[in-house]
Length: 478
Image (tube, rainbow, N blue to C red; front, side):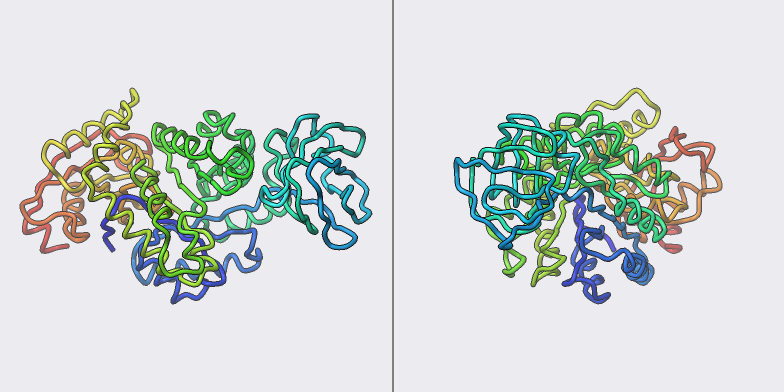
C-alpha cells in the first residue's frame, strides 16, 4: 500500500479500536504505527493485541510498527476523609507521610522519595494543573506548601513536580514486567515515560538489548534541560505535550517542540509529535481549525510522525480521526512552502561514508528529478541516514529482516519492504527496479537510485550508489 505522504501517523489502540476490523480500517485510513498504552491495557492482553496487528500485517503484506508505551512512575496524593477537599488560595497545605485520610489542611503523599527531594520554592502541581502549590518549608516526612491556585481536589489525583529531580528511575516494577512482556510479544519500539536523564533511557536499552528500539518521551522540564544527552542515547524521541504543558509554562511548549524536532532530525532519529492533536474528534466527527493548524505545523516542521491518543483509543470517531490526519499531512506536503521549509532546515552531512552516500543520493535525486531511492539495508541505519536528508524522493528500504522493516515504518518518507538480501551488484539493481515498479514508484524508462553496502549483509557498510533504469523486463517480473 503506497502512501501519498512522507509523514507517518501513529494511532493509539484502546476500547474504541480493539476490534480487528477497526484496526484494519485504521491502517487503511492511514495509520502506519499502532501505539499500545500500558497505562490502560492489562499486561496479560498485550500479546493478544500484538498478534492481532501481526495478523493484519500478514493479510495486507505491509510492515506495521508496534509501539509499546510504558506507564512510568505515577505520582499521586492519597485519599481524603470525605473523598475530596476544597483548598483555598493563600492557605497553607501540608503533604506528609501520614496515611490517615486527608482534609482541607493536609493529605498523605505516599512517595517518600518526593518528600525527601522537595525544597523551599519548588512547585507542586496537582490534578493536571488545576491546583498549584509552592513549598515553603520542609522537614522529616513532610512539606508545608502555600496554595497559589486552589480548588477542589479528590482522592488519588496526579502530582507533577516541575522543579524537582526525583531520585528514582523512570522504570517502575510494573514497567519492568511490561517491558519484558512487550519484548516477548515482538514490540518494535518501546516508549519510556517521564524521562529525566539519559540514564533512564539507557536502563531500558540495556534490558531491550536491541530486540526493540527505545523512544524517550520528553514530558518533564528535567528532560528538556538534559535534552542533548537524552537525544544522544535514545533511538527516537516523542514530544509528549500533555504532561510537558502541565509541568512548564504552556507558552514555552511550542518552542520546545521545535527544538526537539530539529534536534532529532539533526541526529537522524525519528521524532513523534503527540497529544491533543485532534482532541475535539474524541466526540465530534470534525476537528477545530486550530487543531488542523497544529497538525499541519508539525508536518511543516518535518516531524517523522504525528500521533493520535484518545482520538483513536476511546473516541467516537477513531477511523475518521486517522483519515483527517492523513488528509492534513497529504495537503501540507503538496504545498510548495513545505519543501522550502524542509530544505531550509537541511543539515550538513556528517563526515561518514553513510552520510556522504546519503548526501550524494539526495543530490542525484534532485538533479534528475527521480521518485525513488532504493536502499538495501540490514539494520535500517542506511534508510534513516537517507531520511535525515529529507529527499524529495521516497526512500524504499529493502531489507531481509522483518523487524527492521517494521521499525522503519515510523521513519519519515520511508517505504519498507521485506525481501531476501542481494547476491551481487546486478541482482541488487535488478530487484531494486522490480520493486520500484511493483510498488508503483517507477515505470518503464524511469531511473531510480540504488544505495547499498559491499560486501552485502554487512551492517554499517554503506559505500555504493548506482543509477539504474527500469526496463520492460523489470515490469514483466514485478
